[in-house]
Image (tube, chains in turn green, orange):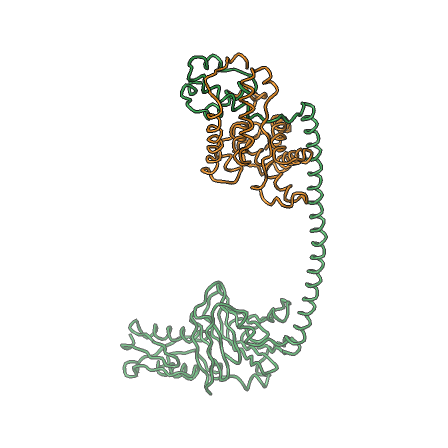
Length: 370
Length: 202
């Protein structure tokens, strides 16, 4: 209570709780009475404050203890009512939600059923035929498209070293660089594939309604969008063919071995396996250069090997004829893509031999054979 | 210092904290501690005693029902007074009878400061002075009166008053200052303050 010794204004006293309780409740815990009488000036100030405080008294609420107690009981009842109301409101909201949740579920289900029905109907009626464009749309790897509008087959070398001999009026879409665990290309028309071996990264050719899966081999796929059939003809290795999941969910696979072929009838989504291609007129007729040529060379001059490759892939190979004129090779180049063939030939000639590819133009640089 | 408070066992903030945690006892103690005070304050804002008590009970009801959302650091008394004031103001707004009253500002502080009966014990001169002062006080503008009441009767700080009356700190302290200044001027003219009373009378 030392602060009161510094009080100089009436306000100081007025706001002093202890002073208030002395004046108003006559509870003098801090000996205000004694303190006041210590100095005359102080007594005057205290008196002013006392009068003011007394004049400021407000009428008591006039509530007895039992009044307050009753009010408290009433309040507890109000609380109970309010809490019940809130609970009810919450429940209502919940019921509301639950009700509409069910409606929502029902509507969603109906919608799903209808979409499935609609989807199936449209699939079976109009999507029996899967076109190249639709296939491209399902891939988002950023494809490169090559179209052969010329009247000669065109060679395409893929990033993994595989080569594709693309026939006129055909196009192939393929990623610039194969990423992931699969190699996928999309064909429209006809192409002869020579796939570099990589069992960890199977190679898929999507062509119309069928998918051809290989790990390393050579085969021909003929899938023109305006022709009723899709054909796959295998030269070396082994391929698996199945229908695209866009048209059918069946996991049926057809395995093709060398010199076997498969014809897929697009209108019926049926596979027809041809075990002896020589008996099939259509296939025999369409066999291209590359498939007829033999790549088994036994002590053959390099110039002749290059000639064979030129014929097979319809490319030009430019090589130092003088330097390589006495070179003979024994090698097997079947079942190898173009780049592999070239690599093998160059390696066989000598360490100082290399090749460069520029579209249909190949140039060999060499200092002669060992 | 806290002699005024009968429940000295727990201070307001402790009780408030326990109330927030759902302690019914603390709620009841706070209710009993402040109800009467709030009623007299409420009555100064509205002439309808029934409604005032309703409002105050509603304030407490909301405190309990929405206790989870209460702030933990409040001056309980100021919070209660302020809530009651707002609630009565809102009631006035809603009430057809009070259509004219539109905002908290227009809640008139109707309370008349009164001369206490226990002054009967005092001598006549004292009673005269107190009555005169009382008259002066009651003639003050309502806002000044309310500020004085909240400051010296309810013991709120100037900041809390400013908050309650929705004015800034300076305005609130001006209200108080002007109120007292008027009193003092009038008072000095009317009395010679030489007469000192023996404090034995109170």
